[in-house]
Image (cartoon, rainbow, N blue to C red; front, side, top):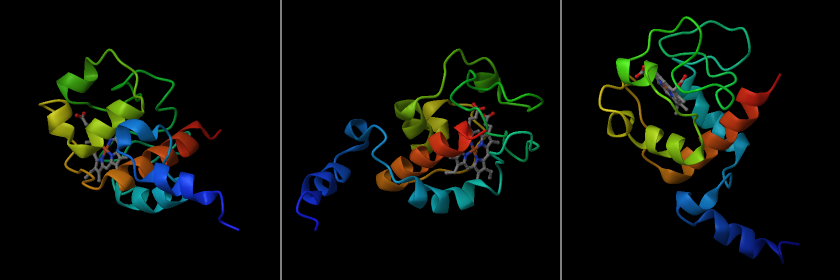
Length: 125
Ligand code: HEC
């Protein structure tokens, strides 16, 4: 029954740059449990230690209403996409020197899964 699954399975092992939404949102939900310490993601929920991530892909970076960002992120002039999120989650301070997010995700597959979950959850009504 998995006769055609080989190519999909292989694709999952490629580096993140080639994954492009190759992550598994269900696994990403599990990864997000660590993020949820600091981030809500449902519409209308308050900011915590980190900003509410709802609508993340529709707004510019650093613009969650009422959240006190680092100067770098507050002044950001870009929108988050998968490649930027992958760099951010690898190392927030590597992505932006003054970033105040004290958390990173070392495993590339975990990052891809988390990003797939972010797409699903941040865009949910
Ligand atoms: C210990 C608290 C903490 C944890 C855990 C954490 N974050 Fe954050 N996050 C922050 C803070 C603080 C900021 C604001 C950073 C700044 O202003 O430089 C932030 C910012 C962000 C942003 C930018 C949001 C925007 O509005 O531009 C994203 C995306 C993000 N976090 C995703 C995640 C994900 C995904 C995880 C889990 C893998 C995670 N964070 C775990 C504290 C946290």
